[in-house]
Image 1 (tube, rainbow, N blue to C red):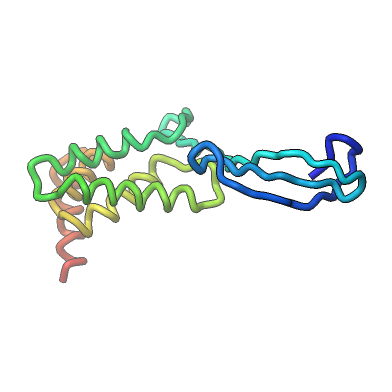
Image 2: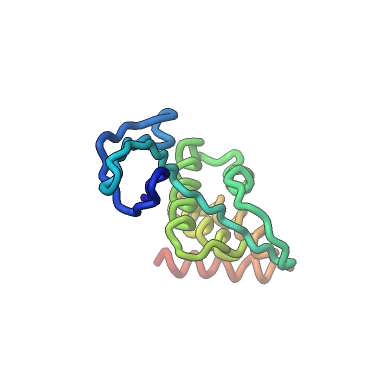
Length: 152
């Protein structure tokens, strides 16, 4: 950290404490050259996750949109809101842990279907039918047959 008084680039931390309810860290430092003290504030840098849609437009990832889509698929099914929240948490964590700052709706949809398949098969098929835009009954039956084959 560069000293604001003399410009020397080496300092030592004298005191660290949490500030703003843990959102930042306040550090008291001492310059190793001139001995003067100064305060710095560290903030976690968050880079927004950008979603690339089918039409190639881009928007910031919205957790609420994902939750709403999964809720629609789970409507009138024995899936609790806690399960849905945990599912969305897992998906968001997986997306944030990738090095890519841009993800496609395809990636998000696949992660959601993977989660739904493990929780409720009917919800999975509902989500898949909208997400994969089933064109006719044959496409729908193909997906059901895949599900049945995997189950065996």
